[in-house]
Image (tube, rainbow, N blue to C red):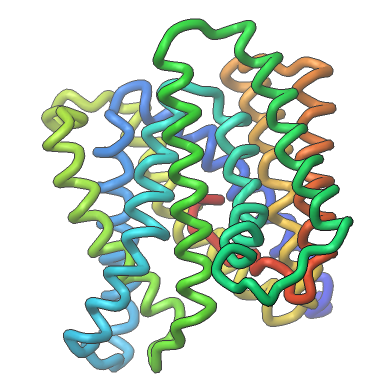
Amino acid sequence: MQTKTKAYIAFTATSVLWGSTWVMSKVGVKGLPGLQLSAVRQFIAGTIILAYFLMRGEKLPTLRQLALMAGIGFFTFFLSNGLSTWSVAYISSGLAALIAALYPLFVVLLELFINKNNKPSALTFFGLALGFGGILLVFYEDASHHHGSSYVTGILLCLMATIGWSIGTILLSKNTLPIKPQYSLGWQMITASVLIGLLSLATGQHIPFQQVPLLSWLALIYLVVVGSIIAYIAFLYTMQHLTPSVAALYAYINPVVALFIGAALLQEPLTLFNIVGSVITLLGVYLVNKSVHKPAPLIADADGM
């Protein structure tokens, strides 16, 4: 089989598998609190990654390097994965994935605020309007099926997670450590898992492990093996053999995958409003990335977020 063909297979796997992790997170939180699920997942995945690199002779990071990775991990895993996993206890997996897809818009907004020299074009503002307008359309339709503060809580948690990932993306692009990105990822996961675990204890988002049902354990195993390891390996292969612009398209496919799998497996609402709003949102994200001089980096999240 040709390398190019393998790369496209890897790209398809990345898009589908990371999209499916939103649904599996939703399955997992039915029997295991979201913060506890995220903490255990990141700890196991981080341990596996670190064990692999340490056995291959990688050196332990310095205290300064560890502090920097922990700081980045606070945004990339503590806020993003911890809060997004918590959010799917209150909102649909498809909606959570769609909100997460907005992160390039927040990256652009944050960089415009930080760097006053960046002059946005009319296309940038049009894309931003489409992106947030599409989300509002989905909100309007989705809110008709949900009432009460829990729905609002889920939306706010997912928005905070998306903003956290956006900040982490900017930090990753501006801070280059003399450490392999995959090795750094393991340290980010481990340090974030400790913080998420502490938050789960502080908020009462934890239960004894013997009370966790089998379905949640299976979801956790899927998230670790498929979401944090297999899909990430497939993404790295894609990045090595396809252009970055093609590889980055997974970010637009993930929400669509989550939307349809969630509807098929979990009977989450799938209406014309949902579909049209999702298309408008993703079109807005695409236009914003196209309009800026340096596109907002679509850095791989080991969960889709």
